[in-house]
Length: 188
Image (tube, rainbow, N blue to C red; front, side, top):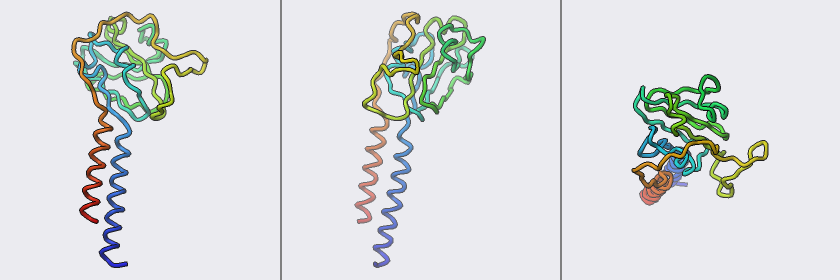
C-alpha cells in the first residue's frame, strides 16, 4: 500500500470518528419549558408537557424572571398537593435553570411561589430510556394503572403565542451527513 492510500484511509477513519462523535451529541434535546412563553403563570404546562417525548439525556430549560418564579422537582404527593413543606427533591431558582433528565422515570415539577402551583405552574413528564416508536402514551406504572396527568389540576387557557418547533436532531443529522459527504469527496 502506498503512503497516499494509507493517508487517505487514515483521514477517512478520522472523519468517521469525528462524525460518530458528533452524532452521539445529537441524541439528546434541550426543551425550553413552555416553549416561547417560557416558565410563567400564564402558560399551559399540561399541554406543553404532553407535546414531546422525553428521553434520558434530554435537558429541560426553565427560563423565568428570577425572584418571580422558581422550579422545584418534587415527588408525586407534593406535586398533587402543591405543598412544598416536604417532598422537594431539587430547587432551581436562577431564572435559567437546566435540568438534565438522567433517569427513565416520572418527573414532577412545580413553581413554589404562592398560588402559582395551584394556578397551573406544574407538570409531570414520563422520561423513557430511548426513542421507541412502539411505545404508547398509556404505559403502565408499577402498580398496573395507566400514567396520566392528575385530574384535579385546574384548567389553564392556552397561551396566546405558539411556535412550531422542528426537531434540531433532524437538522443536525442532515448537516453532519452533508459535511461527511463533502469531506469524503475531497479525499477520494
